[in-house]
Length: 239
Image (cartoon, rainbow, N blue to C red; front, side, top):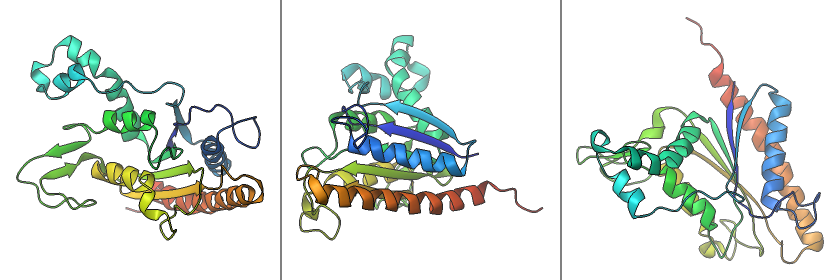
């Protein structure tokens, strides 16, 4: 059985194309999850809406609790980290992270950055020791990604007001969303990364419609490919 973590970071409720002023990124994540469920009705899905309920920002108390050795943590420190622990547990349990994250001002929304900060924890998702060599996903010395214990994929589904932000586009250098998310997740050990985005949101009209249709079709192909790959690994191997 596959486990999906479905996360939406847009504060806009509803889905574009169905609800007035609905979210384009929510439409994409809903489409991905619906297509996956059609292929695997028994899929386990955990949903978290951080657009409506953002994670708590890191604070002095959070930092003090995080960097206090486990055996010295007080009950109040453990309470401060409880939300972060729950978010990490969701990520660790997932085979695939389905992340709906609109581009805001060339990068990620504040709620999603808070989620990243909460799941990047020394001793829980990444470790540091001078004995460690090169990072297997990001070329950093002395860090060990603790979520590299098994294959995990992240699917970043986004929406952009403008256009030309894809890797080969004229505004690629201004796109700090996909590169930032990829780096953060690979740093903790999530090796598979896939991104699909809708553009032309501000322009609207035919350009937005064509971009949306292209994104939905690409999601269909990605779901089929990932489903085949992930479920194949779940099949029992001959003795």
